[in-house]
Image 1: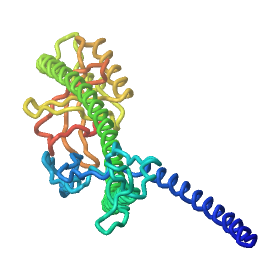
Image 2: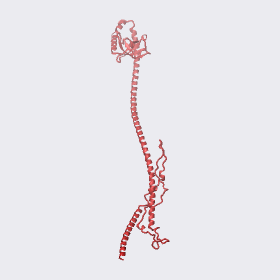
Image 3: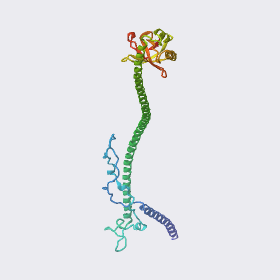
Image 4: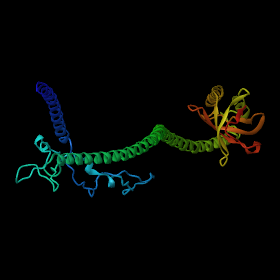
Length: 361
């Protein structure tokens, strides 16, 4: 008996230890199941008919024209928008839900039995039913996770394609920006050239006005010279009358032709040049040098001492280079301008008189 009592004591100790182990495991499992359950979402029917209304990517080809209604991709039409829903109801489990291993008969409040007299461990109100709901929620979470992974893959592929297209587009834009900058530089250069040309045009317009003023001044001078020529022609006519009178027989008190020739004399040589020619009236306008003017002035003063005041009727030759051109006779002097008028002697003219021909005596 003592031996049996000792054996029973040892067995009771061992069983107590096993009981504590089972109790600790059971409580840990219960606690773990409750914590896991609070992390699961309750399964619901996914609203697959909801279409994501997001902006689609423009897939129309680029062209040098405006396109108000380009073609778009259909990426978002199959996008499962419900996967983004963060307001899912979580699964809730308490320790009390896990306490009933057997199904309890409501009438007797004892474990229910099947027709074979075996206690029922499945069905509503049992730990098995709670665990099956938790497993169903976990499967639901896994399915949603796999669909999310699949959708992430599609989004990644679409994102990579978009990045490649964007990078290619940026490279093209860089090339276009380089071209635009070159065109801007060309435009700036052309603008600078245009400003320079505009300034040059303004300068030329100013020169044009100056030249028009000079032309007007020269026109006035020509008109004044023509008036002077007319006046000189009148003087020439009067001088011709005077010369005709001088060639008549000399009355007492006047000098003879031989004495006139002694007064009208000059040093031989170049005396000046022809300024202009009037072929219709057969006269020329001359420009004498200072020495010739001094000689003519001396002759004029000598004539004043013997005759009525007037211009010495001196005859000159005109030459062009070494060629003889014509013979002329002086009829009028404008000492302030160093100009003179002379008649062309027709019987002595050998060639056409031109401005620049030299005067020789």
